[in-house]
Length: 453
Image (tube, rainbow, N blue to C red; front, side, top):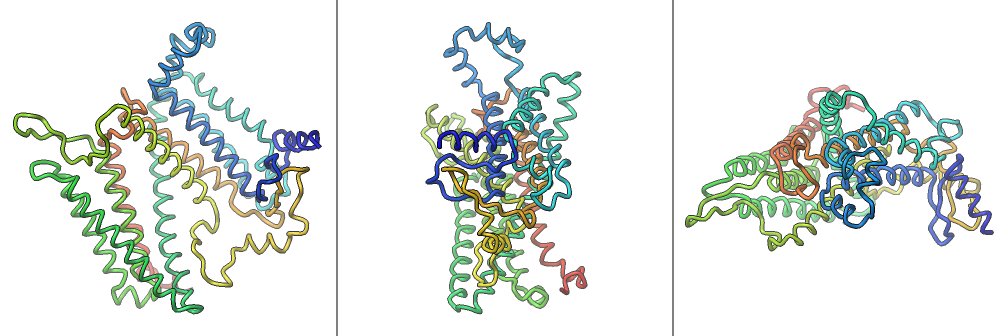
């Protein structure tokens, strides 16, 4: 029995078999889900390595805890105390390798429509070989010639890819808001209580948005400083009010009867979150009070102790990685925004296929976990687009970990201390999100024939 389990796991690592856990108590998993989890694990592993490279604290711990650390670095030709393996340049090189890995797979899997071909088999299996290939790509970045020119060019490539990644997430959010409202509105046909659910959720969303405005007005403004905070808080709050009124205006309601306050509620909450994040990312401002320089427009979330700052930075880093992973995975499904379904006939196509082919799609992997082969009739998601989103996510992580364009002297412990580049990126994201939503409101008026169906 043990030999069977070992054989199955070796087939997962070195062959085209789907990946599963050894334990049979684990719930069954779909082949498409297991594949995406494995790629996400690779992505997370490289991201953690990048964080370690940007942390002087970890570097110092390695020097203190690893015996013969200096000699080991010299044997690896990594410079004195492994200087070439730390800092923003090392992160750029590692992320260059990860980005190349996902970009090559994106090109390799173009127009793959089912899991029966050899390209699909490579995408869904051979995990050990792909891990070796990923490690080789990341290591190869350290052997690129003309390092100065490479870093300068790659910095702007990373910034462009990071902006595109943010744009995809904003488009996904707008689509999610519309789909949520449409699905819940259609639930009224089955139960009138969905009206109450819509009203309750909308009230909660707008209460959170208004509460966020009041909160930022109290803690992130000051009579003698923080002029930008006052201006942008007023602008973003006013824009959220405008899009809310537009969503229920007669001209919009005539072309989009399902348009309501739920969508602008979702958008308003997200815009307020981005505004709060932008204010938190802005460099601190000082005001002289009674002859003493005092920091203003900062919420006192800690006691000022170094241990507290480490905890806050660690939590912020974990949240960042969680958001990036969630964004990568949810952006690649064909029905990623079809959440909170209420219609009886709105069952996802993938679930229907799973039920129809349940008899032969479910395979017992020895004594281990069950794997459901749910892509025999067609792929659940676009393989090429999946890898392309992870390619963009690699660039976004690279720019975020190195503090975008303020990389000189940056370290991961200063992730939450803020910089002007991060502030303007997040503030611009607010406006792009609002513009995208307003376009979805006016698009039927501008292009009526396209939206007739």
